[in-house]
Each structure stands twice: as C-alpha cells, then as structure tokens.
Length: 114
Length: 117
Image 1 (cartoon, chains in turn red, orange):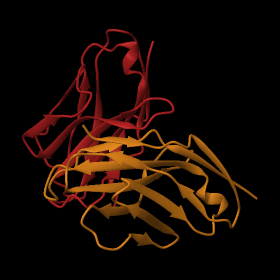
Image 2 (cartoon, chains in turn yellow, orange):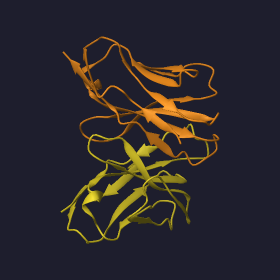
Image 3 (tube, chains in turn green, cyan):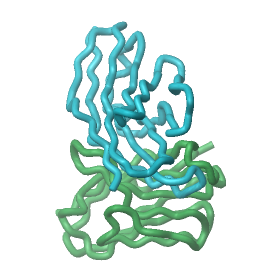
C-alpha cells in the first residue's frame, strides 16, 4: 500500500520555467490537498479538491493551478516559476466526509527556483 | 479568520520526562477541530491526535494526550515519558466549520522539540 506518492522528490527550476508536481494516492480518497511549507514555518494550503472534477482555492493559490480528472491523481502546476515559490510542497488526502478524519501526507517535493 | 499560535519555537526536555507543547487558537466558529502533527527531520508529516470542539473528553492516543481548554482557546499536546524518537517539529492545526466539510487546515508555526538523553 503506497499511500500518497509525490514525484519528483527534488527539483531545481530556473525563473520563468514551468513544471508539474505529481501526486497520486491509492486509497480511493475523495479529498486531496496541496500545501507549501516555507523554511521554519507551518504548512499553508494552496488548493484542494473534494472529488474528481472539483477543485477550489486555499490560502495561497496565486501562481499555481490544479486539476483533478481522476480520484487518484491531483497534479499541481507552476506556470512561471518565481523565487518566492521556493518551498517544500506536500500533497495530502483523506477518505470521507467527516472532518475528524486526519489527512495522510506524502513525503514532499523540495523545489528550488534559481 | 482562524489563527493558530504556537509560542514555543524550541523546547529541550530530558528523556523520560513529560512535556507540554502549547497551542492557542482563534476562531469565531462554534464547530471546529484541532489536529497535532509530528514532522521528524526526515520531513514527513505524521498525524498524532485530534480533538473536536464538541468532544466531551480530552483526546488520548497512547503517550499523547490533549489538554483542551475551550474557554481559554487552548489545545496543548502532552507527551508522557518522552523518548529520543520524539525529537521533531510539532505542528498544531485547526479546521473550521461543520464536521462534514473540506477540512481546510490552518497550521501554526510549529515547536521544535529536542529530547536529551
């Protein structure tokens, strides 16, 4: 049981480049999330999805886009990378409708924009 | 707007001692929940414990317990009999709104706990 899988684990981008961070879960979870964690800080919600075809903005969505065409996958797209997007990105999922169920996190993607 | 405050940037504790990590929150919602996560140096986020605003008892999970004081808006994590493997960053997070919802979490800045042998 792989859980939440994020790829790549590390990436260096140049300013202005684009890339997609991949996130896949094999637990048939309805809810998926993307967070960023800046050095010495807590996580901040970028986007989330309550099911295939449904996404919504979190606290810090600017500069990012998401899509959810299947239950399993929730990719995060950076269109024009900026140094302010240097961060560790976490994808998470949780099973159902009840908000007491914890989110399961992937291992993170460490992204540097130079 | 909801807010989580963790006022202890770092804590140092002797092995086998109990430790309390502070978390205060601000919300105008009557229905909310509080989570604690552990982040070891390897970077993954590990769920520890959950407390709902309507739960009558303080949550416990093994060596972890939550000292929930609703009137003071605090949800402190208590780790009993600390172990070297407890050394990590600890994050308090809150979800607001009805229990059947998207669970958009707001995280505190974290407390770095170091257990000394």
